[in-house]
Amino acid sequence: MDDDYMSDNRPAPLKGIKVIELGTLIAAPSCSRILAEFGAEVIKIESPDGGDQLRQWRKMHEGTSLWWSVQSRNKKSVTVNLRLPEGQEIVRKLATGADIVVENFRPGALEKWNLGWEQLSTLNPRLIMVRLSGFGQTGPYRDRPGFGTVAEAMGGLRYVTGYEDRPPVRTGISIGDSIAALYGVIGAMMALHHRNTNGGRGQFVDVALYEAVFSMMESLVPEFDVLGFIRERTGNAMPGIVPSNTYPTRDGKYVIIGANLDAIFKRMMNVISRTDLASDPVLATNAGRSLRMEELDTAISAWTKQHDLSEVLRVLEKAEVPACKIYSAADIAGDAQYLARGMLEQHTLADGTTIKLPGIVPKLSESPGSTEWLGPALGAHNEEVLTALGYSDEQRRELKERGAI
Image: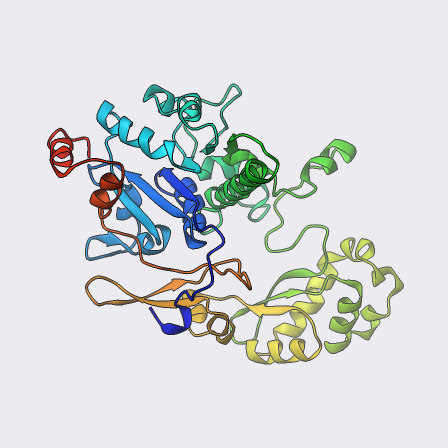
């Protein structure tokens, strides 16, 4: 790890907080990853039979997913068979001394293994349990399986994404899981504050993936309720906020331009020599511009098509109009802003291969997060964690022979 990104002597904000992760793939592991990045001790419970399936997802290096390096950084991997009583007992012992348990099993699964909220909170009344699931812990859909893709559909995001004459499309990442993970972190922090500051007990945080997506849908519901308006797909245009779109350039590239504030719109029109539009009183506010979106997008496209992307960006930056090229991974890897803010961390894998990871967000001035180690090997922390729980060498050998760890 480069010296620039090494953790210093400042205390991490979550130092002393112990988290047990009972999760796989994206939502719960993303939630606990953020907690780990800011100093929480996160013990990730994995199946002895191969561990978290994310270890095998997407692009691989030496048999392990490159995604794993970032998704499980700063976590401790402990293998436990949750279906065996001996494995369940390990988790109960861990939960007794934990502050937070994060899980994303289907509702009822942990209860079946005697590891649900009622069981664990009885052992540890101060415990906070973050429960991420497709549809939440209650309601008629609670027992349905639900991944982020389903949540994006039910939450309203897929319906408005894409072009009106084509089927709905998805974003290029698992955004539903990631949004739910962020709400899990927020809920955990609020519950932790309530427990520590307000003298409250522990509690569970119920995050439904579809609700996390739904909460991002801006004015979708009030527009429908009051006006009967159903927002449809509008391609790259921002519905009701004009101009804000993607425009082609002369060299076959694209530029994102957001000139939707009144003063910025005037600067934009003046700089592309459309003073007639800049001075049009109807276009002075967004309400008027929204009625003439196609006209304005046509005018902007006519200008961008006459210039290469670099020239478009130069002119708009000088005019203080928000604009940007569309970044690929290659663009990100060499970008000055990413580098200046430490958003590309350099690390080394076990075999000596160097690897860049995304930096940590958000940036705290007094107690920043850090990457202390990359995603661990399966069961790398079995001895450390189980020994701390009082298991002897002989007991660990017996547990392993029985398939409990």
